[in-house]
Length: 366
Figure 1 (cartoon, rainbow, N blue to C red):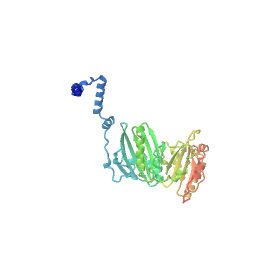
Figure 2: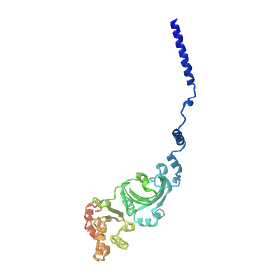
Figure 3: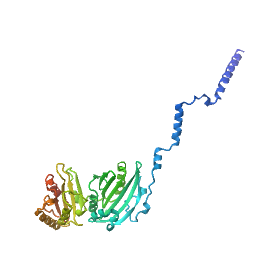
Figure 4: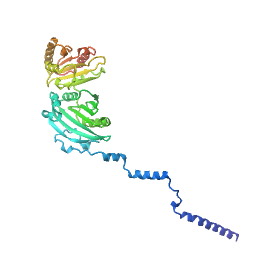
């Protein structure tokens, strides 16, 4: 009987506990929440705003105007090394590739540049334009490609495209000159000379332009540096500007300050420069000198032609007419090669000419 009383008491306690707990479990869960604070409301609004707002970069991309590609208008004879839009990252070919034979080079290069390049041997010219957006600003690249008959001619064309510039290791060689408006590249690879004029925010897009040029040169067959360039010393550590020409008429305006234009015309005749000769002109900076040391090296078709040029030039110098003639010095002919300087005083501070003689290339005709 005692056990039955205990069981009844335990059951009554259980019923009482269930009576108190079950109603609480059935209450609306929101009824016990604390009212929202200002901070929590602010967080909620911020989260809703972030969910509905587009990504910042996506908004910027949406605002960037579309550049229409012009690949469909390319000349049928367009060079294959000039990439199509579909093979580029970030760039669009917005100006189609146009092609002209060397006789009509002025149509694509302009009259003044075509006039200076007429002494080189080249087959045709191509021109097109690329564009992209960098930091929200439009950047355009006007590209000219000149396909030469030899690596000598291609390198020479590249060397006279810019008056100055910093040498870069892109392709066989590249020179870059910057300005407030952008930058200009002159590049040599194999038998092709390239000129790129970049307009826009060059600083922010420099890497992209370099990659574009690298992609182009990677599809052009490489050639060795012209042997005549190897004979012009650079190991002295003194910066030099070196240009390879067949005629002094190809040098850019104001390329030399040691001789007048009329004197250069006479020098061209005395040296017998034409489309069959090759001449390297190097201007070496000397910190303690008033002007640069300008030395030159001419390669002739034969030793007889070199000797005849030396004889003509020497007779002119014997007249002692002043001007560049008074500051000129010649070395005796060395086979098909003739070495000289137009800055005798500066050369005496460097002695570049004897080093050129030691580095002259040996050819079968010598």
